[in-house]
Length: 250
Length: 64
Image (cartoon, rainbow over all chains, first blue to last red):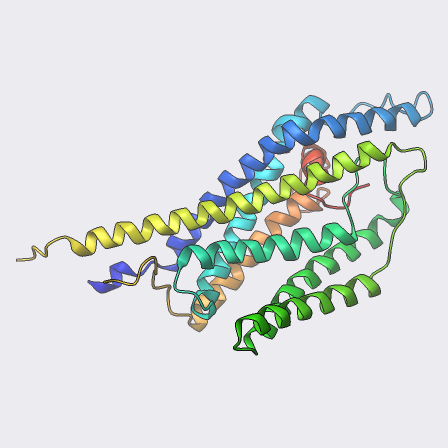
């Protein structure tokens, strides 16, 4: 039955979700080790700055729970969501990706996502720790951030389309890079800028927090791409073994 | 020699695209739950929102 050798959407999807869960937990571990010290330092600054009496409100969730189980839950759920989307994109786009290697296709898609929804947004709207950010502008900042995420993906897509118009290897690279940079430049120019870091907020803490956030997201997408590609590769190997078994049907 | 490392993905039919779009919507809802929900979706008041506070910051979502 040759159809057995063709994985269905559900088979690919389950692998994406599993890879996402693993990547999310790994990113959560990274975030706990590398990011949490900076969040705690920022919260200490926030509380020191608040007028006496305003910090005594009973928190809904303990800091200890937020920084452990809550953090892992958030990164795990986000990993599962991204894993499901990656597997779906892989299923729909695989035939259009001009590579014979499944690993290259899966890892390439994860790399495209890392570029479009992490790196491009990070450079325009670097994430902020607690105590940074004006609550009055949260809606504008959220919409602007969503816009830069979408435009980041559009930029990657434009780069791929532009590269495909050329046949010479160097021209492909140049056209792809140029189209990507043009879209990113237009997006960065049109989107609003927010300068809300308090003058007395420690620059080193801000830098360390932002790098740890970039690291968390990079770990998530890299691990997701590698794990998903690995699970696909096992699927291929498994099928090849099945295919080489002698046919024993009566 | 078989072509190395190449799986045949399912044919992209209208039905597959509809399923894929529906599932992508579901996954975006899950991402929304982590990134933005303040009780409307989770029906847990602010509990889940507060629980996942640190994750939101470190995942780069605008917060506060």
